[in-house]
Length: 481
Image (tube, rainbow, N blue to C red; front, side):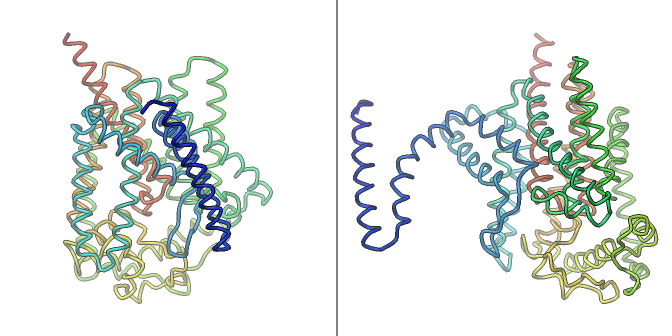
């Protein structure tokens, strides 16, 4: 069938669809049926655009990461708009491409990163079988899939050309800079008041924790852009952007983000000195020993807060003083949920309670001594430690797999930095290592990898590391040749 004949058939079907839907909508008194023929006409050009212009949608996705907003379709179903629909569209495209041209993705499928991800996904499917609410667990796996396909696989594919690294940095940082500028302007109207920060970042971020987390993770990317820019005028613009970002970070009043910045600076030094592996071993041993000491003879009960003293402080200096004295409401509530989380792990250590199950399951495992004014949890938030969250919901095997995957990514950035001869690729690896260290620091007191902002940056970093591994192999082959 030639193209002219196909066009005639399609026109006839479209006209027929229009009349059938028109008659049906009149009969049923339901005018929304008239949308169907217009959708029918638009579907083929839409599919052609998605298939032939996949790159355009990918760059649009990166732009929308800092700009997306949460939207509840129903009380139990929410989407991040507009980035999540783009993730779903791109996932379908990646799956179709994998089936149609699997050879294009050979270097990605052979990567250890992809194998780690497959191991994580397989265990998610196994833990699904033991979840009390399998529908919630299935939705979790589905969402994880449409994050990984575009942000890991498509990222690795698109970034085979080195120039795309700069493009990626621009497409994520510029929209975030817009958010920071508008937040600072709105915050200035309130005199940069500590409490008022919550009113200034909508609709782009739910709270100052999410906002400051993404902001601090993009500062190293801004530093990379400055390193690779030779034009004096552009360097001044980038320096001004970094200055605005640091100002925004200060007035975000987020202790976790400030700590992440310090950890990023330490991580920068450790990677350059090739000492990251040793530091990780020391940190893990210290963490395990500290945990054992706290659990032994229930010593953790010594840290139970005074219920009437754990209040929300409207003055930031008082908030910091309460933090040092372990009396601020946010950290006191963290202890409350961490105790519950550890008890949940002890109850079901191997399979967990199922993905997305913490809120529905944790109350019976709490300790009354750690209860605070916000323990009724009106926001339905989780345990505030991603590593603990993944353990209590999917079991210890999930923690070991995810921790192993994370450590592999971190150590790969150090290895890539020291093995590359190319100065450009070396510093990209260094920057990614710093970002991943910051994300790890943030997720010890939050669970941000399940958000589109920090989760997007995390999976994007994994895809970029696959690209760097390919470039390192090409560089070695070039030197050997």
